[in-house]
Amino acid sequence: MKKILIILFFALAPCVYADIATERDRADVYLEAEEYKKAFKIYRSLARDGDHYAQFRLAELYADGKGVRPDRVEAYAWSVLAAESGLERDEEYSADLLSEITDKDKAASEARKLMGRYGQAAQANRQSRARSGSRACTGSRLNCGP
Image (tube, rainbow, N blue to C red; front, side):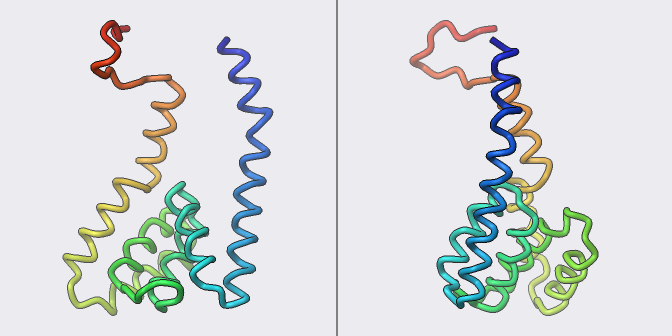
């Protein structure tokens, strides 16, 4: 059974990555066409899945108020996640946004909150749990021990 799941994973992985690229492209087309709300929805979905490119774009949309109410704190928080990519551009953008924010404590708090939900460590933790097949023991599962 485990072998079948591994084979299935590697067979479908290219499809998943192709879907991410397709979604990015679709969002980019909406962005170019100035259909910001549509672009925002796609970038937000990808950003929540840990896509650094989408996190950067989402930060820009929040900062510029395109497709969403302008929010520098939210923009900064998403830019911190994007900066996990290690790209200098993302790190500089994040630092620039922070320099424009007066309530730095609020910005840092929001960034920590998003990091805990959508950061690399949170993504890795979710993937680890998924690979191990761990499931929560609920009241409907009376005999759910190892």
